[in-house]
Image (cartoon, rainbow, N blue to C red; front, top):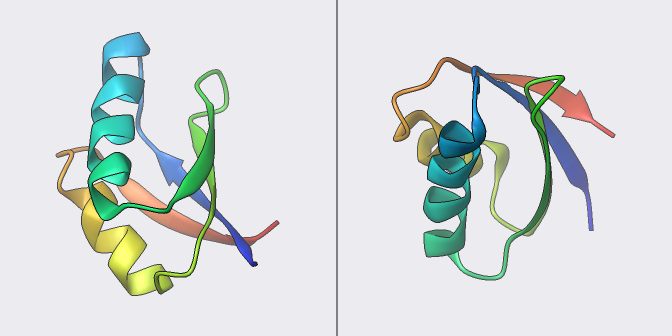
Length: 68
């Protein structure tokens, strides 16, 4: 399963929780949040476009960094 890395403008634990809630709604998504580096690594089947669209729903600035 590919692991996609995204940069998400998270500044606090609450921001990370918001991202977690959005990803949990996708179902079957495994992810690791790196708050100090403002990155999230997602291992899942949904496409990059689907993941990016979901992350943008948080209202945070999001960009795709590539595969881990």
